[in-house]
Image (cartoon, each protein chain N blue to C red):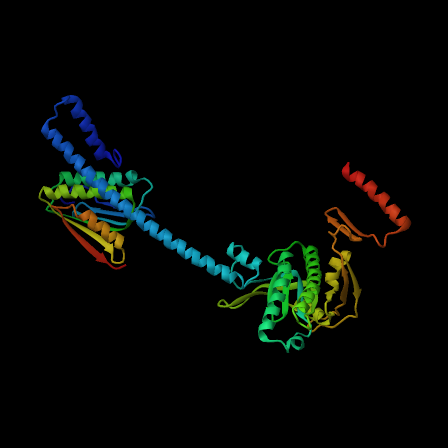
Amino acid sequence: MSGAGMDNMQLEATDRSPAIDFKFDEAVFTITGESYPEDVSTFYGPVTERLFAWLAEQSPESVVFNFELIYFNSSSAKVILGIFDALEECAERGVNVVVNWHYDEEDDTMEELGEEFGEDLEHATFSMKKFSA
Amino acid sequence: MPGGLFAREEKVAERASGVLSEAGQSVRSDEMETLLKGYDKLLKQTKKLMRISDRSEAELNRIAKALDEKNAVLEALSGKLSKYLSPQIYQSIFTGERDVEITTERKKLTVMFSDIKDFTSTTENMQPEDLTALLNHYLTEMSEIALRYGATIDKYIGDAILLFFGDPTTEGVTEDARRCLLMAGEMQQRMRDLSLEWRDLGYERPFEIRIGINTGFCNVGNFGSDARMEYTIIGGEVNIAARLEGIAEAGGITVSQETYSHVKDFVEATALAPIAVKGIKRPVTPYRIDRVSRSDDPNSPRLRMSYDGLRLVADLEKLTGAERAKAAEDLTALLKRLKA
């Protein structure tokens, strides 16, 4: 395990929660699927706790974060905004942070949401990635 | 989530109140800056979340509206389609009770066949528009009566009507047959009224209909292919109803022995010479219905009562003299016991 000193984190997607694939050793993080868990805090609590601690403590050369979401509710949006903030703070410290927002080419809503989320990033690099389902 | 979804914001508020209580009126500018930064972030997030939420709501509204419109279209469409089906069939399909698939069942049904006597020769001098109006008027009137008695209208075949009792709902074989006969009686009565109306309208030769009724086991259900099916009945017993209709007099009702056995309490009938029906081995004895007296008519001389545990058939015209007195005595005693 390289510098991270942490196990990778993998959660399978359920009906209401996305798949989590956090490769701390490679500094590549991916959230895929739909997000409207019954209790947002219960689902995202352990995930963000480890992520935020890692982002605050480690100083990797670069970090890649992929959002591949189909749908998320307002509480999940709050969590995502929190992740954006943490990534932006990390970038502010000089880490090369790339945030990729993947969206279905036919999904205007996800495209607009991505643009909305990305507009506040100043230090991190934000890029919209269209895919066809 | 440790501290919950708003842990960060709560921390800012906590800090603010801490700073305030420590510093009293004078707040250090670096503390103030931290608080402001936290507040700005919160404001930004709130605005963003609000926009997201508004957008979701708008999207939901749009979908709900589109669904409403689609539902209205479907409703109108199903309303139109329903007229091509008997109401019971429509109901049972739309409530999900019945699957739309090729399946049939064997059931004891009472089947009625009717047609207009000498339809072709009666109508050959009529204008097509007049004929259409007259035929539709006749079918409308007959269907209204049929549906009121709970019949399943199978189909109209030109001027003929095929309907039955016993599927998709049944009141029991006897009650099904009884309803069918009462319905047929009312149809003939209505035809007599209608012929006066039609004569007034200038139709020289008003319609007269013949009715045949039979009770027996038929195959009922959806026949056809997956692409085009028809809910109908088939079987030799259906042919018997058609044959009985063929030998009925104009304005008359002819029933089979089986039907007669279920309705004999409240009809007067004459047995006719047995007939042979193609595909049926046994000879069929037709009964010409001479009179239908509704058992629920309080002035009818014929009474019929049927409960589980009590069955009563009375013909007050027949019951005279000493027998009538004895019957009254017995029934009074029975009444006493019933009320005890």
